[in-house]
Image (tube, rainbow, N blue to C red):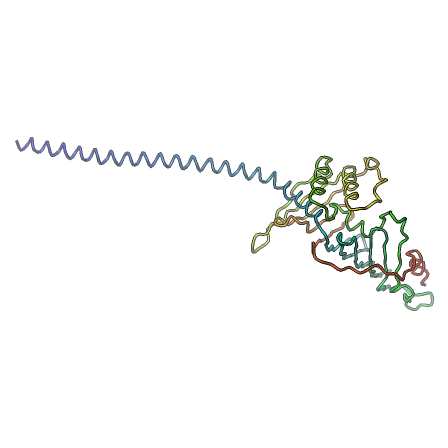
Length: 323
């Protein structure tokens, strides 16, 4: 009897242990199943993330670049610092331009020459769509006059020289055109005009570009995208002609883009702010020219063109006659 009771107890204990281990085993199996599920999901997330990042990397170049083009075409004013050096000669120019309410440009330019004939010249410049104005504000040189004295530039300093307009309807003002007809044209176009012009640029292949570098500035990790840009002359000039019609520039009307089919492609580096999509800097591979762009869409009151002027040719004649 005692033996039977003991067997019954052992059976109950074994049954309890089986039940206990069965529950534990079930929990382990459930846990392993959950782990497998989590690992599988995590793997899918990683794959999806990598795919999304790859897609983002590919599409981000388009989004940022064309966002920059759109911003350039929605600009009423800006300031540009341009620096160009070649051998012993250099040109530094700071220019403020407005596209609205007046198409106007104002700037100062510093010319430098080093070496035995070292010299500097500073000019003040005003430009409209039809005419340019320039005056020398300072000139220094190591050269001496024929009698060994310092050269006297008083006849040219402060005197405004004006270019001759080629016609009432001809927008041949070089300073203004240089300010707005850069690698990416600048203007204050309507939304429909911007959309149409960008569509044309894309369809014609005006630009080939790729992100060469991405940097982030502290403390907020503001990104800057650096693009390598190739400009295709024919399609670029086609786009410029369309742009010129929108903003009232006439001097490109007679230009045939196909005449530039044999021209060499131009190479630039363009920096773009990742948050605003504004172009902040450009560098031209040919000619060593660098430009920094700031002050977009600020209200600017630029000087009016002078009324007391001589011709640019006369101004240059006066300068060359100093000896």
